[in-house]
Length: 339
Ligand code: ADP
Ligand code: MG
Image 1 (cartoon, rainbow, N blue to C red):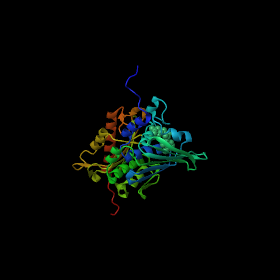
Image 2 (cartoon, rainbow, N blue to C red):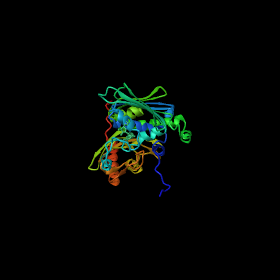
Image 3 (cartoon, protein in one colour):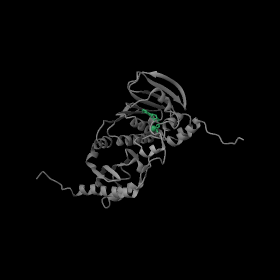
Image 4 (cartoon, rainbow, N blue to C red):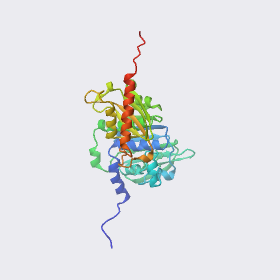
């Protein structure tokens, strides 16, 4: 007996998944940058044209892939990062779902060039709308370059839905900055329509923040530091007098991954109690290192939401720690050497 239910062909499943993973050029930027980080790159270059609508290219000096993996990486659920379900609770990589490259290749023209150390030749291949078009050996530097062209070429509704270059570029910058802030020890650069947008050499965290926000931000930052059984917290929070109307630069990173969390945001704001003018918001760059087993990041494909085992304790620790840092800052004696 046959029914009416069928398994979707891979290219259809990939297009559907792409709708979730890839909303706009910035989503591709995030996935490619994170893959380069996972590949152990120390130098990552992002090149975009027309805010990523016509080109998004990421070039890294990471591990590269052999000829077999260069093809396999475009398969759905193909990943080198986890093998068994338990690995999800001990994650040390940004990726694990194995669906980014399959999704991106389903809705764009992709050119991959990759080479591993000790390999004489690397691999170059092109794939369009999920179909392999060409594959050839190529002499290439160690690492990987992935160029994504004509995003959503086969989904006109999606393409038309994209905002102006200015708006899309802003989203790209946001993703670029989040990854760059999560990894100050990696050198990042970004080029838009042929001109340099960012040049961030490997640095410490303070230098990286200043590299992104500009020189004046240095004096606005107060260090925060706390270590408990639940989490190690570090980073910087903004001095209250520099708080601005509307959301400022507010970043949480959990195990080097940018996340949004309204509850923890509230903990930080609570620490500023009585110090902020009405409606003004402080900047913060707060990093939490927790045991990988104590969080779940598999809530949404973009992984910007995280579920913590013990959110309430984390709230209390974060609030106390931010308060402590602000207190130290405001009671510090003002030394005037001019007299
Ligand atoms: P995930 O990152 O979740 O594993 P992706 O679709 O993003 O899934 O990538 C699939 C696989 O391709 C990765 O697991 C990795 O082995 C390989 N890969 C992707 N990008 C790179 C890169 N820049 N350098 C080396 N290997 C890569
Ligand atoms: Mg990935």
